[in-house]
Image (cartoon, rainbow, N blue to C red; front, side):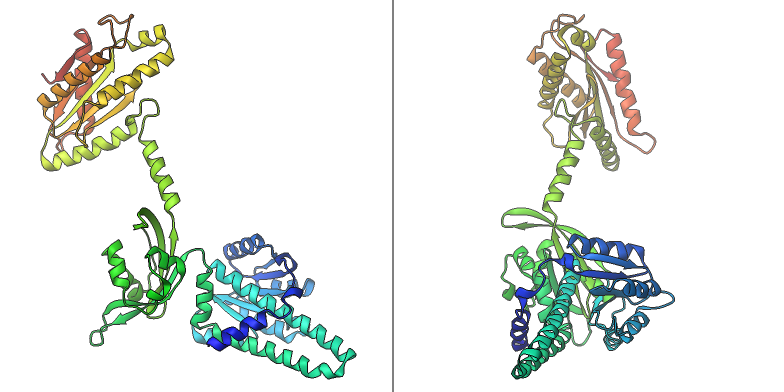
Length: 487
């Protein structure tokens, strides 16, 4: 097989300077009764500068060929009325179209189906679901063969007229083309062809076979058959250190111990597996997405680096929970957190406390000092109050306008009153002047405190209502104070 690889490379170089340089010179006819498949293949080929024609059934395909002869045909097998085999048979029986390369594309993967495809004149076979890089590589290869064949035929005619002595050389070139086609067909199922496609992929790709316990038949390990450089890089290994080795289970256990039995299930059931995972690579936390599909008695896996997308998602999720003005949690974050803490305190039968407070006569402050000063005031108050709470599960959030809320899990009423007093002191300490306040010369806050042991008979809304009631009472009694409810 190694000698054949070198032989193929030499043939590919023949007349390479004479071949067209742009895909746009090649027209490809796609025949598929599934509109979605037509769109996917058409977009893929157009994006790679091919001219594309489409047909949704065999009859339309034959008409399209007679109207404008394509350079290559991608032909689906399973179609109503006239299937792909019948279409290919008619094309090969017509002298005008018999030389057009036909690549079958089908979900059928039995050897019988592939043999029948080649017997009817197909030159290649792609199994669905296909990889885009594989489709492009096979199309490019067959177009090169077709163009080389045409060039050789033209040279044969010219050389025959000019010099009879070159007939032997022409025959040699014909044999080389024949040998090349035979070799490509044999390489279709070989690892060498798979490796060439795999190694050119922008994703990490590997193929593994199951290693079973002889007596029970249970899968104990997976042997790496094909590993492209991107997969090797993820594991900080050289490719040669992975191929043929029984080290997959040890590597995958570092990522997630539950993944190995999941891959075993892929092989045993045939159900694909798709999953995101995180892995430290070169001292950087990376995120990857993989898809594993059954392949004989093993599986093939494609791994894509999604770190950039994942970091963006995490950043957007973080920004969605932060109040843009004050830099503390927003109301949405508070609503989500109180539900979680309510459930946790209910399970653990622990108290949950809430402090609801707003700034006294803040509208008058805004009217007198201006909205820019008002925004700065809210920022300072939020940051001062934030420094009061130290536990990681406590939360301060902007509830709306000049209103703030502090959530204190595992805290009884006495503890909440203490936090409220400390928060008032912190606000007082920053001493923001407020000439229009009717209770203080500086910005002050009125606070309502509520505490409850969550149960199925109550809800987070009940706790919020209690704190709101306490805040109302505090305002009625003169503001600039903290009141707990019930007293």
